[in-house]
Length: 302
Image (cartoon, rainbow, N blue to C red; front, side):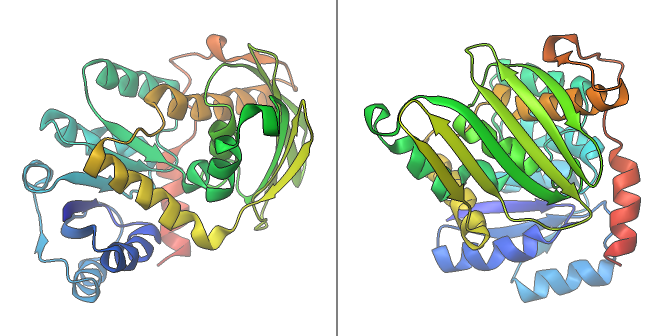
């Protein structure tokens, strides 16, 4: 049984993950550490409902006493500090989406990976069964990918990163530049890749939209709507496969490329739809404001 530490149970994911863990018989939350906006009463109720035996006041203690940490903080600016005790303890840590929100934090994750740390993440859409099944088809059957169109809704980054992560499930690396090509209730961002592929992702801010991908290959055009009901199981099964057998997941470089694409898209929009190369992103750019998002999220989920 894989023991999991829940860190900052801000989002709906811990409540959704816990029943799946129990049903699978593969893992369970055995500890909680909370420095987020959730009240003591909320934490106590979560622990009672999901039979979590211990609340920790020290993140270092939690890291020592579980097999893996799951960071559920809605403030991505805290993710590095929350993950560090697990990295220091030599334990893997899963960071829920968005994994981080600035280039500076992306670079920290890469440094950890180079030093041997295991950081897993971040969006369940990357591991959607529809995407995985498509990529598992023989190349001579599905054809080489030429372009991808993907849709998402709600907001630009916290939810919008899902569609960018989904594109990463098809094209896990090599993004070169991003250009915002439409602004308004529906925004569109065009991504070019060093090996010639392109992607266009669309965000409908303020409205929920399903995740749908249209993939053009050298053989055909494939429409791949994603069943949202199966996303958590797809993600957790992959994490538990890794914990049990070392089955590979997305690399840190691929995970942070999704963040870089979002950052480049944001910069493009702010600079009048200029084409922004990922290599030209700046370390001193604050990126997306995680603290501001947390304040709004806390009000909406009080």
